[in-house]
Structures are given as C-alpha cells and as structure tokens.
Image (cartoon, rainbow, N blue to C red):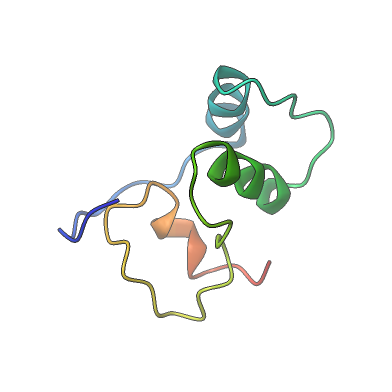
Length: 72
C-alpha cells in the first residue's frame, strides 16, 4: 500500500470472494467485512477495513472506497 491517491470503484462481493479464493480462503458464509479482514491478514496487512474512522494513510488500498462507509 502506497501513499499516492487514486479513485477506485468498489469491489463486488463476487470479486471479493474470487480474491479470497485466490489466497486460499474459503469465503463460505462470511460477512463482507470479515472476509475482507481475512484477506488483509492473508496478505500480511492489518485487518483494518471499516475501522479507520475516516483517517487512513493507505491511499492506494483496494478497499478504501468502501472502508470509510462501513462500521465493521
């Protein structure tokens, strides 16, 4: 994750599940936030999705578009 700002579209649940499967995570019936947290952990990142309270240094994070909208 870098520091350059870039607008990104929200990922669909289908895209999120595909990303999870690519990392060896079985999505099952996990809620969106829980699945994203599992992906973040698998990628070696802090499971911070939805927890930033509007202040996040990771401007290139693929979850950023949705992150500020959620209270995980």
